[in-house]
Length: 409
Image (tube, one colour):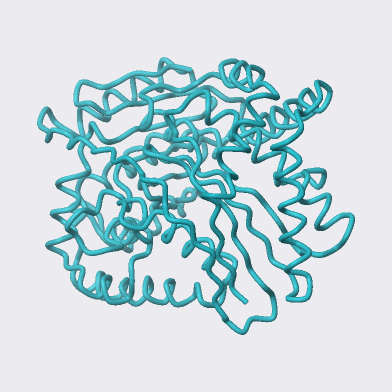
């Protein structure tokens, strides 16, 4: 893998794979948290409308450009990034990478397209009412991080989206979509040096010797939130609950790897994770339960999410308390730690074998750290986590005095 930075400030990482398919992603350091004085949801709406026309291509041409090659073009927005990515045959990788940069550098935001897309996004906002498991988590995180830029909803509101104008979109992109805020990642069966040379030629052509300075992202400390235990009567058949609190940030190297391992032990995707084993496999109290750990620049959020029948709610909550308390009180044995680490490393290896996942991960790492960690570095960080560190993390993250919950009945 080759990692570098073009003269304009664009970071890049290229990695050779043994696949006929090529993957590329453009990660832009501009998410919901960076909306500032703009209308809520503008980052997500920008992502939607980048595809609605550039100074070189119409929306119709953009929509069919990679389709005609059998490729795929997509995008998503998080609280800290906008990501545009594509999958194509390796021989079409240059076209795909050029299109990603074109979408990010010369969108025109036609009024008629913006009007249509507002209806699409407002419908997306409304659709969350039909997905209580997603809605309850979003509301939980917004409450936990209330008053902080990270507490803003990614989609915005129907009211705020209606107020977004083409002029505001252009101003937002001009301010935030600078080469220093971008990272291009490529995974393909092409010589890495050739890929690097192609990226450098493309960046020189796109930015043409002139570019704006990248605005600094101001990190804000996240105060320990006031404890909240909220129950909302939604009159749903299934109860959806989220329990959690603040966790280590993306830049807390030691703390975040312990938290990653802790989350996997408590409620990872495997059926033998402690909550899956107790609540689903042994008792059948839940349809699904998981522990998520989201890492942000300023902080992190760890949350246990589950859906169950009303009659099983109290049993599930007691089960969660039992699992957490045991990890807080008892050190995991050496054999349990070895097994937990092997399982996590296996999951990460299988995940990274997916070219798209690998490409997106490289982009995230570039934009966050300016580099891409190797598999060996990640393995060493996970192997360095001790049982003491797991217990300490459980005590801090799941401290009863700061542990909050939101339940949709």
